[in-house]
Length: 172
Image 1 (cartoon, helix red, strand yellow):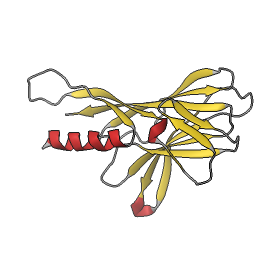
Image 2 (spheres, rainbow, N blue to C red):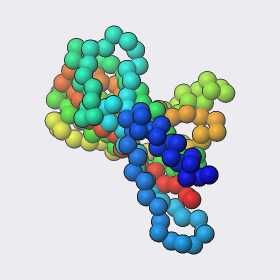
Image 3 (cartoon, rainbow, N blue to C red):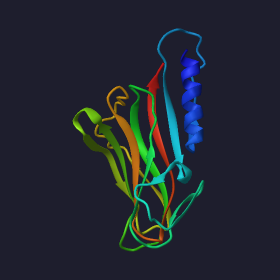
Image 4 (cartoon, rainbow, N blue to C red):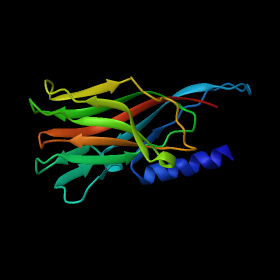
């Protein structure tokens, strides 16, 4: 049953442009095994938060063509009770003032609460780079009562989102 559930999750993720890197311990023991896994999200996984954006999107990034600030959102599907270690976002930033902003957000419908559990920005001093944020406010994934998304704000046409990687640990 676990294998069927994992295959269904993988099929849904691939349809949404989400890449899964799956690893499993090689032990034949029935003891619980904790593994570190990675979820990577490319530009194709994201949808514009509002209509009317002028953009290019592909597996190698999201380009804001009109220079107006734009928000993008992608679902983050992690195993229940996984522990989120960090979020890393790759970007191209050629703007001396503005930064790409990213937020890992948790939505709990029972109280209509949207919480930012990771918050980071690009660095305008490097044209090609990445930012890692390992200060996760609520690191334990609760799929029973919440959903998760990664929200990007691309403020200008000279900043490009390249990809995001989420490291998490899961016990089998």
